Length: 564
Image 1: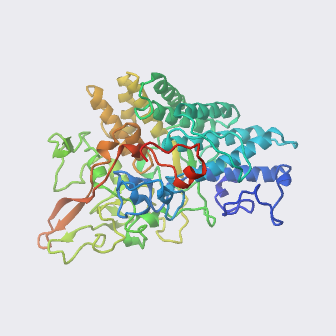
Image 2 (image 1 turned 120 degrees about the horizontal axis):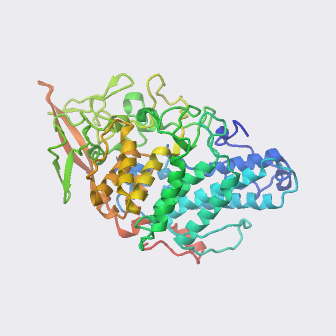
Image 3 (image 1 turned 90 degrees about the horizontal axis):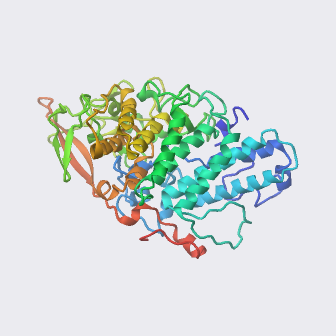
């Protein structure tokens, strides 16, 4: 199987892009069902294609556009979320589609298609008549994938139907939702059954990198129980869930991983590069159909980028405000929605990007930043008649926030064009997240000292000051929240974090802001003026996604998500 996974995203002759499953339709130009389960090569090919269920975030419309990380300039597709227009009759607009599908947010249909294929595989392995050397490992990987898919479902919908066997396509089957707790137990059981037969880990330089491992299962457990312990899912504050999250994280912390020394290169190195922080990721390859084009969807018109329809994924001023100053102090104090400059921070409103947490410059391109040897110019002259090359006035493919996403983008020496096959992997689990999971779980268990230690370890990587010992209680909780916001920006955590913490009614009802840079052409002096770009709406029902109306009509046993 070595070197095989990297090509799994290419359309295989066994698994065409159509909706038909290989075992549902068997024309003469396809192999028969009997042939699949009697040929080790076909079995392995079927199994490898199951990894297509793993989503990645390199979409034109990243999930960040549905959060306060980025400005969403459209009022359709993923734009229906921040404006509160999401309904059962339009939720399919944010399905799993690269071009116009909201980054796979509505995963229901895709998930159950793959669950069926996984269940078929597991059933066939129970009655397999031929010898298959890696059978136990393949079964374990399939159970990991089933657990991972169910995790993606419960974070989106809460409790969902548990389907652990296959049914004939078109069979008149109806399924009721299981409870959230039952789903968590099912996921945990699949992971426990899988772990003994999984490889411990694969180095990122290994051709098998991207396959399920014991460490990936531990990472999933850590995230699963962190979510399950959070206020949205844990009204009774069952401390055992926090303990399970901490235990899984601690086992990974005590293993062989380490933080990548350079945060700025953690996310943009090609698949196959050495990186001891990554636990599990979706890899890419240079073969046709096996790479992504994230730079052309996020960089601005300077590089001929498409911008992903109205400057996709432009970082917000909301996010910029939350990067600490280099002395460890937040630049602003927020009180009842109003912000004032923190006098202890050293923040200079005439030089707003100086002396910030280094993760700011590693994540966001701002006015006067240098990237690929180019100095970005987002300014507009006072009279509005001239502007910098990177201003929104120059092109609609330049972000209106006047910030460009840098995270995941290639460093010097890598061409920036539509023809370049970009292969940096989409990281799903990494040690930095595990440290933050551990810090949060230990805090909620009452161990504030350990929480501060692991927050500080994440910050130490970028030479940020440690969390002071006198930071405690709710102040420490807010530090935990903000450290996740900064460290994990644009990695598809923010949408779920503000919901599981139940702070979404506050955070998601705040408008999205950008920054205008006004330049005096006579003196060269610039004035920085915040602008409001989008009024957002969050209602209680939006903690979960609705189920598509057609699914409700087809399956009367399914109850709609509350409020829809």
